[in-house]
Image 1 (spheres, rainbow, N blue to C red):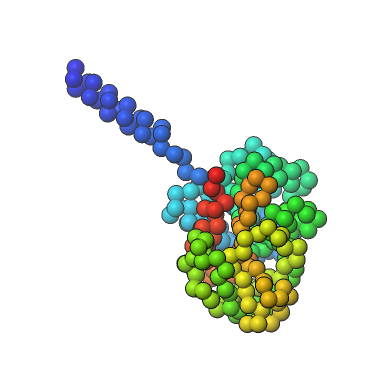
Image 2 (tube, rainbow, N blue to C red):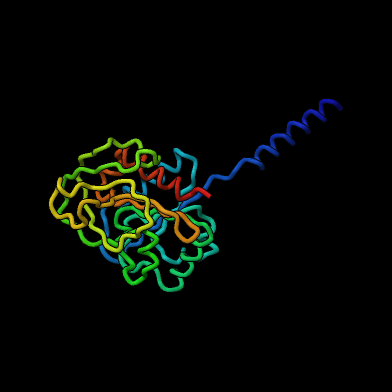
Length: 239
């Protein structure tokens, strides 16, 4: 009798432990391109999926805009726009995404995510700025503005690297800038002495994180960059 009671208690404890264990958070990596298609998108998908495996969050991927249904989006703690471009969503899908953000959802934009939906002003405000062209790829000096944020505190104070260097317009004044690029270190910058390249902000009830880095495949095997996007995803997933 005592043996049976002991077995029952053990099974109950195991069952309670399994049921009470928190479910892993889940993100959606969206990579639809209706204009320019970055060849690094597959490398980005692979890298983010690997980050999920290593850091205990689930990763779904899609280039199909029909996933932008509120009931579906509620399954995700954050939506990652991985070098998306052009007019990605129709009017109803845009409305569903707006509701998702306003209900506390998270957004992460990587590189080309700022280069699209030009006729949807809300999206530009969510991202934090709108793409405004770029010069040829070249080396430039990036400067860390916020050394306390988990996505940039591992960077050197100045980082010289090759990148496709985006210029921006309609910069949201409410963004918290993490990283800038020194326009005196390269040719073709148009934003002047303060040229943001990564930032985060709270937006209409949700959270938004954007980095302009991530043009080429090599970024998605670079430990510094991977940590950069990992912490951006973690920020966006937080509730």
